[in-house]
Image 1: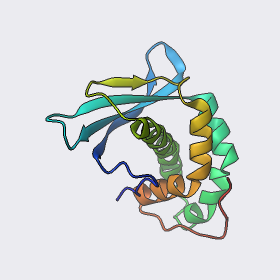
Image 2: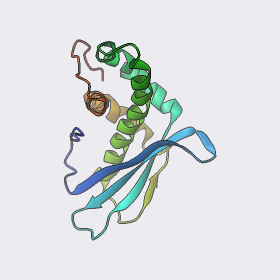
Image 3: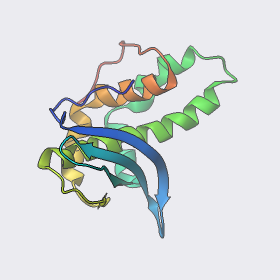
Length: 156
């Protein structure tokens, strides 16, 4: 189950399609693709959401992601941890891309396939991920079927 976004974007139905994947000819940029359908539209659209690896690293450090996930990961058997660690990296990118997509949805969309470039909404995304650190953590833990440990408070 995907945690709900804090703002009302209920007129859209969003489905994660694929990603993260490197953007062609931009090795420092990753993207995730989402299917988006508004209730009033006859058909949905695809939106590619890009984020730079540099911005992802800054966001990861700001929200102390490793520290916040440590207790949940240590409950796993040692031989399972590496595969979970790999998935955490991908799930973090997906969660950040969801946040960036939500920012675009709040402004409204036209019914056409779109691409949100890595250099768009950068400042807004920094603030959004900071405000939604619990959402990002819940998304990752939910996708991994792990229980959250609340001993590490969220940072803004």
